[in-house]
Every structure is written in C-alpha cells, then in structure tokens.
Image (cartoon, rainbow, N blue to C red; front, side, top):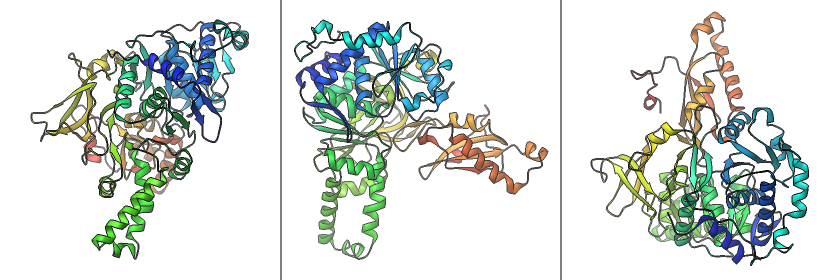
Length: 549
C-alpha cells in the first residue's frame, strides 16, 4: 500500500490551487479549483440526503466535460464507487452495466436519458442530469424536495463560507474500492475491473515523478475519460498536480484536435496512435512523395533541413508547448515510428491495461527504444513466462500496486487472470532485453483494439451476427485497421426460401446495417464477406481464428 493517499492528493490539490483554473469545456465555462470544491460539497450533501453510503455504486454516462469530472471527483471523495460508462455503448448494454454494477445513482446527459428504459434498471434509485445535476428520475421518497433542500443547505457546516482552509474530504483508505470499469457491455461478456484507491494513487504518483507537469500547466483532454487511459493521465494526474484541464467533448477527428491544440497549447499530450498516423499518411508522406521534395530528399544535407522543418511544423501543429507526446492504447505503425525517430520528434510509447489502472510500462522520449513500450513502472514487477524471455516470446505477467483486485462478481475469471502468487496474466506476448525494456509481440487473447484504443471483443459481435438472417457462423477479424465479418451462410435456409445468389449480398448488407445499429462506433463492421465453406475448427469445435487473420 502506498503512503500517498488518493483522496488526500485530490484534496491537497484543490486547497493549494484554489484560485487557479481547474476544469473547462472547450470554448465554454471554466471552473476554478475552488468552484469545483463547491460543487463537490453540494453533491456530497445530495448523496447523503439520497441515503448513499460509502461503497455504494454511482454510474457516470456522458461525454468528456467539466461536470463529468466534478461528478467523478465527488463520488470518489465521498467514498462511493464510480462506474464510468463509455457513451458508445448501446442502450441495452448500458442497462446491463447499471444493473450488474448495482449502481444506485446514474449521472447521464439529458439527450441520452431519453434512450434509456428505467424499467430495465430496477436497482437504480436516482438519475441526475450531468449538465446541471437536476433530477431526471427517482424512486427515492421526496427526491425533488431533497434536491431543493440541498441547494439551500449544502454549505451549512462551513457557515456559508467554503474556502481553501476549511475545505475537507473524508479520510478514505487506499485499500477501498474506487471504481468498477467495464471493458465490455454485453451480458455474458461483462468484465467489471475493480480498481482500488491505491491502484489510482500508484499511477498518479508515478506520473507526477516522471511526466514533468507542474501546477498551472495546461492539458487538452480528448481521449474518453470513461476509459482508464484518458481518466488517469488526462484527468486525475493533471488534476492532482494543479493543472488546467480542458475537455474537448467532441468526436476527436484530427482536424478538430489540431485546432484545439493550437488554442490550448498543452504542456503534455496523451494520445492513441491514430492521430499521428493520419497526419503522417495524409500530410507528411504525401508531401515527401511529391515532386520536387522527393528529389531533394536524395541529397543528405537538404534531407536534414527538410526533416528539421517537418519536425518544427509538426511540433507547432500540436501547440508547440508540450514536453512530450505519450502514445498508448494500441501499437504504433512501424513506418510512422521510424520517421518520428528520424526527425527526433519528442514522443514515447507506453503500455498498460484497464486491470492496472492502466499503466504497466513507460520511459521518457529521450531514452525510448524503437519498438519497445518502455520499462516497467516502479510500482510493478514483471516477468515473461518463457524459457528465454530475451529471445523466446512468452506471456507478460505483472504484480504490484497497480494491479486490480479482480473482476466484479466474476470469481472464476479473476482466478484465471490473477494466479495464486498474485501475478496478473496480461494475455499479451512479449520479450525483454538486458536493460529491462519490454517489447509486445502480439495478443494471446482474441481482443482487438479500436481506433482510440478501445477494447473490442469479437465474440460479442459474432454472437449478435449469429442471430441475424441466413448466418450459420461468423468470425470478426481486423483488416487494414477495419473490422470485417467473415460469414458462412445458412445454405439450407437459403435453399428453403429459394433465395437467389445475387440477393445474398444484399441480405448481408442489410445484416451489416442492422448489427451496426447495436454496436458502439468503434466496433462497427465495415463489411460482411461471404465465406463459402465452414470454418476450420479445433476438437472442441472452436474456430481456428489464426487461419483467418
């Protein structure tokens, strides 16, 4: 257990940075740390009046915003357990997560609330609007009156004057459960990762010591804060440091992101590979391949000058003020990594998983080795399950302060993931070197990664596909960074219905449209490809996935 207390770090940052800007919506309102404290105090009083106890679950569903951040901070500093939900999840998956987590309160955006069915969330007592904390639904007695009373009485214990000296949070042990983060939504595939206050504290303490932010620095948050990577490093770590965090709150296309970077000029950038890869492929590579640049690049001295110019322009496009560009969530394209190394762009690649809240390895950009994901963080130890971890690939195992306590209500899967000696089996295959650098070589499991590092479980999609018309079997694969469903049709039914071969393509297009309506944006199917034969299977009748990649 770390000596640094998670809630203590939040409280100290609020008190020390009271008048500094804390959370902003892009092109919108800014809350100072003092104003954040005021809203946290109000929500604490509301939780108390709604009979929320420490350890009760509170779910958050909404795009990145200052009010989302306040609701998160209020939940964890009250001693309740936060359940962040990705906005991409289908309504049925949201219902399932709310029920499975035993959430008593749900914060949700008003336009999303209209898509939900309260009848299907029987354990839920209250739903509050994330935009203004107004009551949208409640099974609690006199909830409206309680909300109104809270607005008048929440500062009573401070005699109406909340300030940096008297603001105080509860003392909460680092061993307490902090959050349940769902890596999936669908029934039968739900894995709610149970993270403690200590897990988050380990990530924040490491980041404060190694990532170079100071109070007053700026951060642009565009990764989903309901995802562990964005939550820990674009929100909690900067907040505990006293930074000004601006939430983009929009779909982060490269064009939108670059405009925001130009305005915010962040001091540290956290990103998934997609942003840099798109800029490289659409702008840099295209420019270098064009005449006369492609000819000039053949002259060493001119090539060096061109690379320097590209580097400066790339740095400026991200605001020009950042110390480092940290990439995580998915592997970086080799060609892009080679080029960025060549022009000495200040980037590094880290590695983690939700089960470690999320960081496992990192190193600063000056010491980063090509194709590596850095070295193990100092709150973890690692080993590779291999006869020769320097040359023979094996599964990466980790143990230490970052590791989750397990999966909520999933004792069997927990036991399969964390062994009796406390080693977390990551499911990733890796090598190491004499300097302790880790090189991820592939995934042991079937999980795929979405464009922003989201976890995609093909079995979930395949289960839905199998329920559609004329589909006997299906397997989902990733090709050219897009998800493709290989489908073996139900030929017996096709014959029975006398479906013409030319109509089969039309049927499958309709099937694709149907399933995409049920899937988050990051896991939509780009096309359904008809496979003429049954898939090869193991003796256990599992499809041999490796044959279809």
